Amino acid sequence: MKAAAFDYVKSATLPEALDALRAGGVGAKPMSGSQSLGPMLNLRLARPAQVVDVSRLTEMRGVSEAAGGIRVGAAVTHAEVEDGRHALLRHAYLRYVASGIAYRAVRNRGTLGGSLAHADPAADWPLALAALDARLELARAGASRVVRVGEFMLGAFTTRLEEGEIITAVLLPRLGDTLRWGYYKLCRKTGEFAHASAAAAFDARTGLAKVVLGALDGPPAALDGLAQAIAQNGAAAATQEALRSAVAGAMPEADGIDRAMHAAALERCLAQVFGN
Image (cartoon, rainbow, N blue to C red; front, side, top):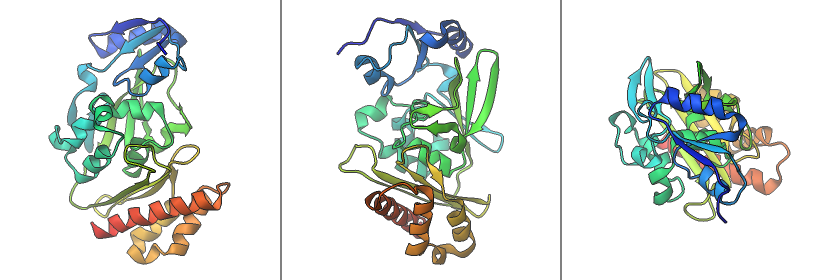
């Protein structure tokens, strides 16, 4: 199919783009890599009157040091992270996650902000960044705010974004050698969305302790009790019984097969943590 007709706006600056989105109201949609919005337009699942291109905005393309961490422009692509194009993003965890997203053609154009805003429950970045307790910088004409990645997604394809608001940057903590991490997803074949996934990050220097389940019916689920037990007792806390109990608590209405897949993803994720 072909997309329904729409007006295309390519603003020179972020304020211009935000003004265009405000003026367009509910009929305006931002577009960056177009790897999610593009297919929806072609299938006519989305019919905006106006598309505002934010893919080349300088304010959303850079990576820089920020107070206590790293500011990553929302229009940075998966491939740029995978390839280590930005010195501040060369940590093995980020590159590992980026390299496993879909296919290279998608990674060349898909962006961090686009993935987070699309909010597919099986996507990689909402899960991987929640494990880092990352934050998102959101902006609309005349206002901005910051929210945690773990609180941003409300449900499948539903977020805290308000009308005319976009993700302008991801705010990461500093990632050093003390970070112990794991990331694992179960897919039927390479490039497909996950049927079960898990991410974990522990840093004794900063006190970070996160274990998160993904590929659920809604947003990723933080397993805080399990994370604290592992932070205090190490691998001894990650028994099969403890993992199964944590999974069951996070997805009480799931069937046995679904729980078993998530428990397996969690076990392999934590094996990476203890092996790093």
